[in-house]
Image 1 (spheres, helix red, strand yellow):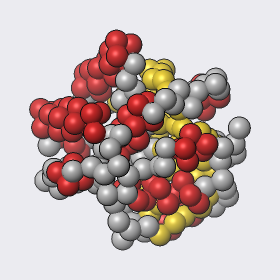
Image 2: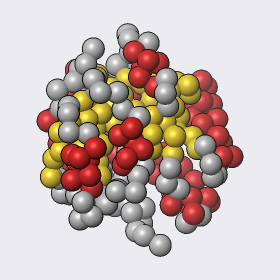
Image 3: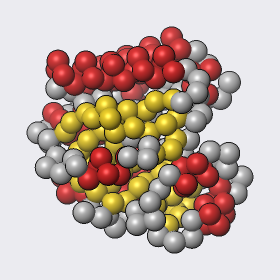
Length: 233
């Protein structure tokens, strides 16, 4: 099964080299770029082969959707520029055959180790007790067929578009699972620096609302807003 990794970028020259170094050559990379700092040129210089760079604007959901449409892989892996894939990631991903989608853990080798581990445990509990796959856009994969079946991302969502996609897929009968051993390593902790309680409350409230509303044709404007998520300190 061919794989495409789709990554939205906005001024990521500091982070993107580590992501690129962790990608196998045979994996297609689709960069959905909205940068002004030369991120696209850096990617082109470091990984010229098997890489597609798109000039994208709009919401992050729209960027991810454009990347999926332009990609060629049978399996779509959605990630972020501020992580690197674990050395065993793509071998482990190959063992996920038979599922429509899988998401994994986002951990840290350095700062905020307890915070990332706590999030992993929460994802495991929600999956084991309730069968709910709480996906993160840093580490989620879905077959192209399943992605097309549920219509892809909601373009108006400015954040949590990743979790909403898997919540909607699960409610509509897709075979989704959570794998705590499928790991990406976080390198940028800016959201946690802004406050742990703020980040947890933001995710918990929004994702609970999305779970009950994800199958609606349209979402309330309240949920389309990012509630300050992308506002820089």
